[in-house]
Length: 397
Image (cartoon, rainbow, N blue to C red):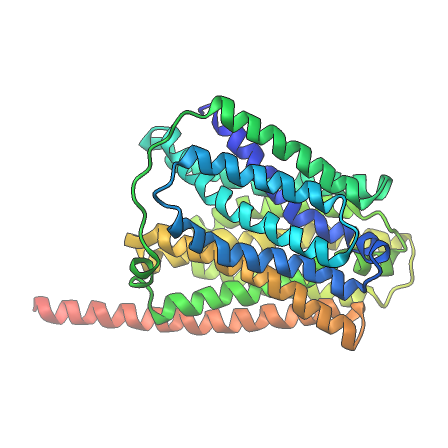
């Protein structure tokens, strides 16, 4: 594997860290900036929505600009945004710096994928792309727990300092190690939309609803776990979730190949709904060693179906429009971040009207809705495929 990919992986790693670490810092940010937990959770909404809008928009507007220069500029802005996050004096200013970080991340990540494909031979482009995306998962498994530990050990501001330092290192690495990269012209937004149909749009809705359910709980996981266990530093629990998520990616890919994407996605969504609802059931326990053990078990298990559904979902989307796989997957990424943002928002609403104990059951209900919607979509897609097959057979006869 080309060693220059490592600097791009470092970039996606720190973006993943910055994205996921905020969940472990919410109580500290809430206390320090005198806002509610629900209000602090909207920082996740701001980041996710800005990323979801920025990825396809900037990807089209900047498709003719030099790739290496854009990588450097976007990561530099990302580093500056996190540096500012570490010194802001108000919640409003932090809200702005999170949006700035998200927009720059939305530029860097797709460009890193494009660059990785240019740095290797065509035979291993798929592996190179998965390598870049693995950086985000590693950010969840390793970076987020480290950032949370730093925030608990000192202050949440130093977590952003950690992100900023690694970001500046990435800027220097791209500047020194990456060659000038030529890239092919990409599709415009109008051209991308031509490949859409009702089934693809509904499947993207499954992505949005399922992710919304998952991130309702993940965004507020710190107060949820603290309420159940009386443990304020949840970095160990985040690491367990990250391990489950990493394993889930592998398991999801394996089962997608073995039993097919639809069955894998149904199995993942059903299991995910049960595990999310379990957080509300665990709130009935009194803080104890037993409660800590149960939370630890759920923490490592819920990441498996939560991330195991991603390979199946994307594989199903590609099967709906193989000729425009890149376009479909780009909008799938946007749908993912829309779900992350909605999860933070709806979770905040649930906390405001009831309590943090009801977030898990609300998450489970949403994921069940996603499961029912996908069951309908899969049935419709199968009917359409059988109809086309019968028409072809009739035509041949």
